[in-house]
Image 1: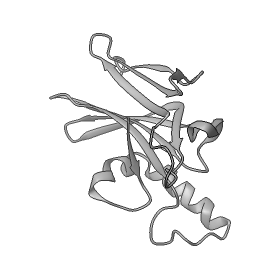
Image 2 (image 1 turned 90 degrees about the vertical axis):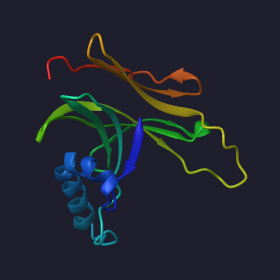
Image 3 (image 1 turned 180 degrees about the vertical axis):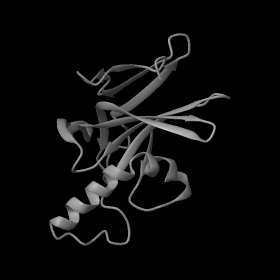
Length: 161
């Protein structure tokens, strides 16, 4: 999985901002309603994890959005510097100039703590996604301390999309 910071606009994150425009707007309004004006020149904190499948006729983006308003805490693993959240998942299907965006329910989002100066740089956690061409299925999940995180492995069938 690759990650994108959606707080500020950039050409590299435009696709993911488009997929989540409505949810990002809701998150921004929630911060403003609490009187938090720090993000008037950009978006309130929003990060995204994605997996992209390219083909000549169709491309598919699986995207998980991490915001305060959209996610719930699933698990905290302080020793590994990892927080696991349940966050909304969307599947965007690109065929030529047409885009279909589907609600995919919720998926696990891995949030890693910032590295501590002088601390170990060994990452103890990872998120992953792989595509099985034969079954047209994406498998996603999280691993922390060399073990899969319970409830975070998913098989997402794309053949009906």
